[in-house]
Amino acid sequence: RTTIFVTPIPSMISFKDSCDEFQAGLNASQSGDKVLIGQKNVVRDQLLDKIHQLGSYVQMTANGDPQIVLEAGFELAKPGENIDLEAPEPPEATYTGQPGELDVKVKTVRGAKAYQFQYTTDPEMKSWTSLTRTRARCKLTSLVPGTVYYLRVVVVGARAQERFGPVLTKTAY
Image 1: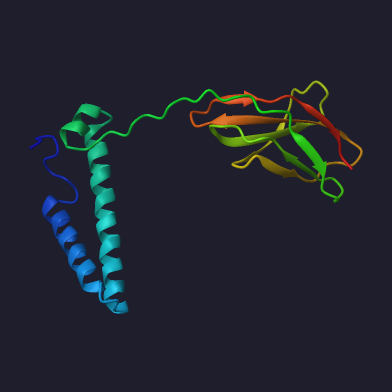
Image 2: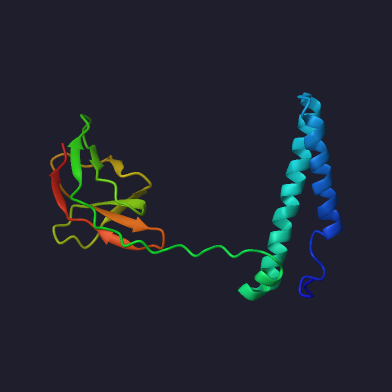
């Protein structure tokens, strides 16, 4: 119906042929024959490539205009919601038994997509070393035994929101 997507890549005929070929492969492979299953998987991968090509074509042609995408019959993804992140609680740091190592963990924060474990030896806390993890736990290594470290955790949300936790002081052994 739309006049905007006049020369889709791949063509709609080619796309329909790939869909039909995949359906035939699905039907044929139901017998459990390993060769037919392998052929079906090859056809499936070719169809997925065409789906990705078509999606890219629509995105490039629409050039960010959601009305064009809707006119083509596609649904727009619902934008993610900002979650008010709570500040993390003070981290816990325990010795691992290895010189210069600390196991640092913090209570999981709802909505957190990543945790930045930061440490410094600077009492003014102007320069931090950061290690980013998707879990609320991190092992710090190569610390200098006998040195006082300032530790904190920064929680990062889906939309790059950041909440800084309180600082913990710990001496490395």
